[in-house]
Amino acid sequence: MVSVPVVRASIDRDWLVRAVRREPVMHAFAAWDLVWEPERVRAFSCGPERSPTGYLLIWLGDPSHPVVHWVGDPRLTRVLAEHLPPRPITVGGPIECIEIVEAARGPVRWSLIDRLIARPTTVVPGSGDPRVRAVGPADAGTLRAWAAHHPSPFVQGYAKFRFDPDRLFAWAAWDGRRPVGVAFASVRLPEVWTLNGIFVEESARREGIGRALTAFGMEAARRAGAPTHLNVREENVGARRVYDRLGFRAVDRIAWIEATTPLPPPSGREAA
Image (cartoon, rainbow, N blue to C red; front, side, top):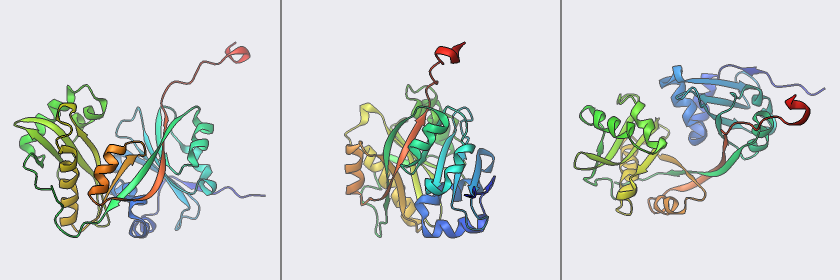
């Protein structure tokens, strides 16, 4: 008889501390969110309590559409699929998760994501661009208002951000008092910083703003003594070119799995 791994609604903190030291990119979100955003995450781990074989970190920033980070070999952690939230969800994890998520939650769309890391040892070129500055109390209202009325759902998320410097470090590019680009660090650990949400207005692209935003975050991480991590879609050749020039290198590749559209209605006998 094959034993089924035990699943717990937690992750052992002592194990996680050790794990993030060994593989900071893989465990960055869990190590940060369980401390700084405990009210917005849920976690399930499987295997031995003190040395789990894998886990789900479920981000509930938007409770109507959870984002799940699946960590661990899916061949050993398949039991975690029983704890995936219902559709709509997005799951980031090993490529083998595509089949498992589809079996558990119905048809999916997916793309491949390269996880990149950079370890600059000297001042990052371009990090002092005068168009870019950290978002402080004086800028927060302007940035939220811009985001709230922006046509991009990606940018609209910034309207809900709490610009508490202990929990969220964000920065923006400005044309006078008008934001034209934005980015934030979703993780700031001694082992790694993770940059997210890098966005540049269409009207301001090809002016070096995306590079300046990235360099600003890299320099902030370097001063804190940490390498910088970010994710980029495999097909985003332009962004990858910028990141390569800034010294980023791929450490691994994961799948970004979207189970978002409604399931088709049943047919035949099932519809009766």
